[in-house]
Length: 345
Image 1 (tube, rainbow, N blue to C red):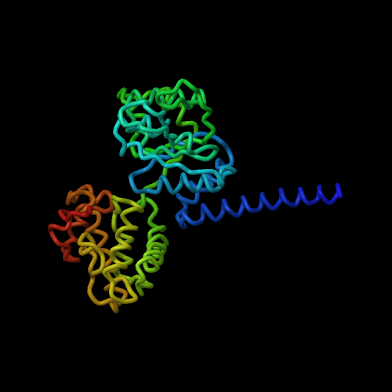
Image 2 (cartoon, helix red, strand yellow):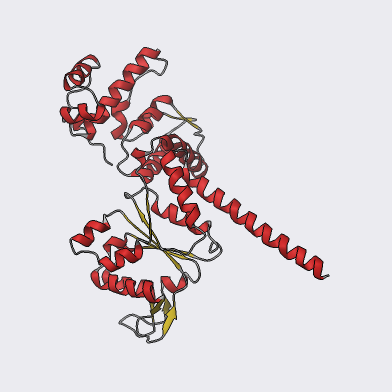
């Protein structure tokens, strides 16, 4: 009986390890896409998922910072515990302390009952503090104390409570520059910056655009009960050549709109928002030479948009002479106002 119990325990442990490995693979593959930059990010993130180290995720708005934090949580031993996300920029300074640490009944006007804060509700799970760079100096001091002492107090209480959650923070701002300008505490920055993960923007990982577009196409078609199942070549070319200032979040919104307005099985370029009109090419049965000509025209239009119609900077970006750029603009009949289009939502 003891031998069987020992074998059962060993098998149970092995099963849990296999489940954890499968979860790590599933969670990270579902977000990573195919681009090499993102594969490197998620390989690194998967290594630290099993630890309790504080993580700082940096990246532009909409680049998937919370998705990465959730993937780290789901791939960690804390996966069965809560994941609490707090958008620090959306809470006024008068409420954020009560939101994070909770309060006792009567702690302030309107506190009619005791309320647990996010740190307490996270228990042994993970608390994700987004836009940490927006915290006021007073809250920075309090957060530093929590991270150092691993303890906090509810508002209106003197009882210290243990903070058992893992902390993952994120920001789109350059905290190092904020430290130099005196807007962010250096001791808090070094406490948060135990491990930093920099997420590339969507325009830096264009290989993921097709994968993400089809993923959003499928999920939104199911959600809105639409027959849309594919993306035309012209529409895909427009998606791949666009600069995506709103990153993954903007792509998700664009695909949801396209699925909703599409009346058939295919997303076409006319189903995309107005900022994609520059990539409209006409019939899709073009010859190879016509397709190449269209690609060159759209590429030059995109670069001109990026540099505000500054042809010298555009030529440097394309690594061609300025005279060659002018020649291509004339040959390809690129609109002289192409660089003045508004490419934002």
